[in-house]
Length: 174
Image (cartoon, rainbow, N blue to C red; front, side):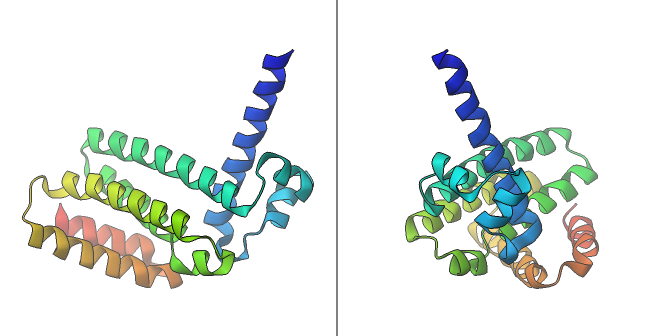
């Protein structure tokens, strides 16, 4: 009986985490625990039964998100096609949106979580950047990141030309 209860807890936590990732991705600054609970058709109290506070939920959310993102990046790199490079840049853009400073300011997430997400975003970037150019000088790495991050920072507030920007970046880099 204990195993079944443990399985249920694990399944429920995973559902909350996945719905949180989706909610943060889709709703951005509009995302809230109230919206999450409503989407899952559970009470806010139930969310906090599995995650004692917002920070615990954020840690679980970002751990899951970056684990999945890293695995996806590796699969895209293995394909080694032009479309896989578009998928890599879209994945990185999604990572930028998930860690945008506005989200941390709105939810007053702590420095530990911000440091963790920054570290994971940097690790994801290293995987993606290496797939475009392999070994590159430190200057080339910095220039490449400034170009991509600058573009994506602007796109975080206006996604209307995201596909066109990613397509153009891949054309330039491919």
